[in-house]
Amino acid sequence: MSAQEIKTIKGMVAKRFSPTTFTDQPVSDELINNMLDAARWAPSSYNEQPWKFLVTRKGDENFQKVYDALMEGNQNWAGNAPILMVTLANDNYARNGKPNRHAWHDTGMAMGFFLLAGVEAGVQVHQMGGFFPEKIERNITLPEGYHPVAVAAVGYTEESAEQESRTRKSIQEIRV
Ligand SMILES: Cc1cc2nc3c(=O)[nH]c(=O)nc-3n(C[C@H](O)[C@H](O)[C@H](O)COP(=O)(O)O)c2cc1C
Image (cartoon, rainbow, N blue to C red; front, side):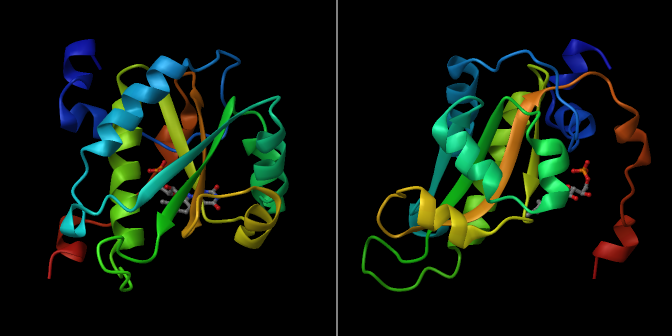
């Protein structure tokens, strides 16, 4: 796929996958901030932007704490990523304190913007629901009102056979 093709949204979607191996190449703070800038522009209910992203780097105390909160199957590969992130959502609207039942939906969408923004640069994101959120809440001081939604491993990858084994439902199956 040419660099020009990857720059289209369809190109980014085609190139994205959830890797279980990462190279040692560090991911710069500048690139992470570029990806966060894309996340900022995701739509959200009442433009609440109920998300935050905890970014930890290998070697940091918090990286180890996030790693320790992963289920064993994810620990087997995710510790090789240079960055572990936790997406956080505020379950209540800041505007009126009422429950925001769209908070996790919107946070997932922001993560979708974030991960697509890394593809052109060669950075991939592998999200994980297999973790113990209570361990993260216990061991890391999170912003008031925010709770862990998912963990994500972030890093550069080589071209991978993992991409070839990916399957999807057909359009007919998802269109009702
Ligand atoms: C919310 C969420 C939770 C996930 N949890 C895990 C997980 O715990 N472990 C894992 O290896 N992959 C996990 N995945 C990755 C999915 O398995 C993966 O996205 C799916 O198989 C499709 O593959 P692809 O991302 O390469 O297209 C998760 C993905 C999402 C979006």
